Amino acid sequence: MPAMYKVRPLHSAEVLAGHLPTCMYPLPNLHRAPGTAAPPPQEEVDPSLQALESRQEEILKRLYELKSAVDGLSKMIQTPDADFDVTNIIHTDEFAPLTTNGADLDLMLGKDYGALKDVVINANPSLPPLSLLVIHSLLCERYKILSAVHTHSSVKSVPENLLKCFGEQTKKQPRHEYQLGFTLIWKDVPKPQMKFSIQTMCPIEGEGNIARFLFSLFGQKHNAVTSTLIDSWVDTAILQLKEGSSKERGAVLRSMNAALARSSWLVGNELTVADVVAWCALRQTGTANNAPANVQKWMKSCENLAPFSSVMKLLK
Image (tube, rainbow, N blue to C red; front, side, top):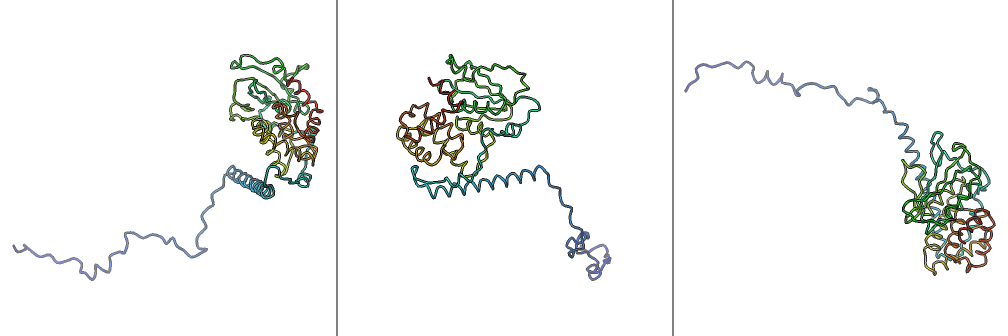
């Protein structure tokens, strides 16, 4: 069917091609020559994030130093009975005598704004943690301590000497005049547990771990080698002397005899937590009578100190 009429095109192809845009709408050029645009504003770094990063770097640095020290020891010590003399390394360490000022309790235990910092320990009376009682007596020589002993309902009876293991506090003072609270609860637990902040912490478990923490309240500072040796003796005393077989105990006694031939104490020339835990393990297991000469001499040195002699009464 033919069209009714024809319409002339309004724009020819040539005119239309010259006016069509190449994009939908124009945009400013984001890629400019250097220096022509102001740099974007820098975001402010959160101070708490900076502190966290600094703390992480410090922890990684200390871990690296400790790893280097352990790697060095592992290359020199091939067997548990190897005669490795670290006397020169230990002598370079700075031992803070136990008679000097202690650690900052606010830093160690947290600031309670006037409330007494109370260390609470749960222990089983069938296997009393003697090392913690020795450290308690040592702490009493440093701080004003409010001591208390309680019995949990899970325990039917507790020997009288364990109920009076802290002795009698003759001088009753207001609670706020004490620097530290030390509460021992005889309870049916598989291993000792300690808390000093009921709301904000999980319990520290194990006699050795609790002893390490409590001894840190004396504020002693050690280098990486000395700290590693102390920790090693503490683990050896708990895992081999106290819980190990007779063969393991014999090997440990030989190692102790060799170490005590070079120094008065297990690590260096000052009493450490290693001496406390090892002495208590020997006394509790009854292996002290068969100990070598150097170990016997060292045990007498321990028992000449009042905190050790007071614990000896609990073993009778």
